[in-house]
Image 1 (cartoon, rainbow, N blue to C red):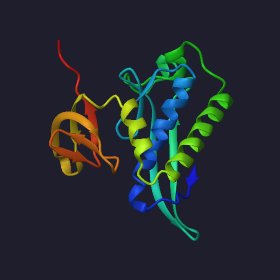
Image 2 (image 1 turned 180 degrees about the vertical axis):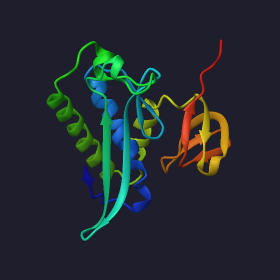
Image 3 (image 1 turned 45 degrees about the vertical axis):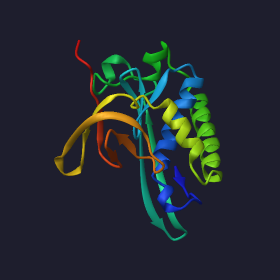
Image 4 (image 1 turned 90 degrees about the vertical axis):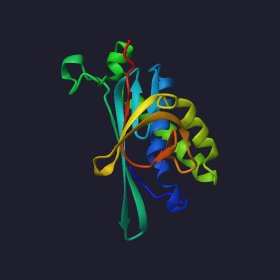
Length: 182
């Protein structure tokens, strides 16, 4: 999708979080028990069902955001690229009608996008995202740009959409949920 947010550029980092929240909400409405993994993955249990990517581009009409959502809909266990992935069909026992699911997802995305642009503080999106984010409260390992690694407990989402982990804030990096042993 190509989006042209009317909010300040400093709020654009919320776009992938918004898309994840909208997708997870639409999936839950379709009886798929989806949760959010900060910043841009949707999980069912510990398995990834969807991912979101966003890139800012400059166009003749001004800056825009290219938003992509990849959702495993009818993928079978044998077709999964990794054992940490899943699909709607595997989560529910049957593949939904793709057109109906797409309509639900896009409708939810439009609603959330419009609400986000009307809320100058991002407070509603922040609260909704935080509530659905399964990363919060988890022990995490954060693989930062440049090869650095930090660990700690994910405590929340700050006003800029960044993950708060103990005494540091993460704006970019790969966050791995650490599985407890025993």
